Length: 123
Image 1: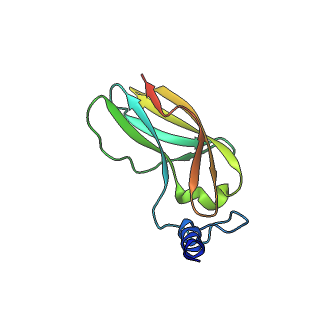
Image 2 (image 1 turned 90 degrees about the vertical axis):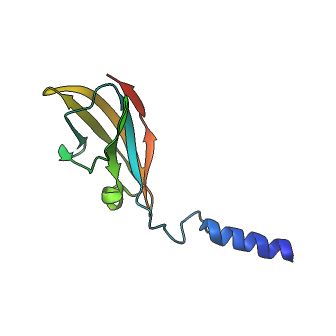
């Protein structure tokens, strides 16, 4: 009986049902990032391939040779739920595109999720 109670509590904490659907979502904002090694980029943005929209996200300051840039946030979660789209991260230096990386991103009922791409680039 103790094991049954423990397993029940564990299943509740994990937030899944027999169907695999989330019972609850965290309040944490999920994001997808890319780390760029080299000189700082002058401008960065993400292009949503399906629509051609240019998306801009807050970029956290960072120091050193490697800088981390936001590619996508939960802001498009509802539009990506249960499907995958390609987003192109572009970074510019002196007006030229020096980073051009595609990211496949999906979402569930709660958050976006990184599917595939490189996560560290050097220019």
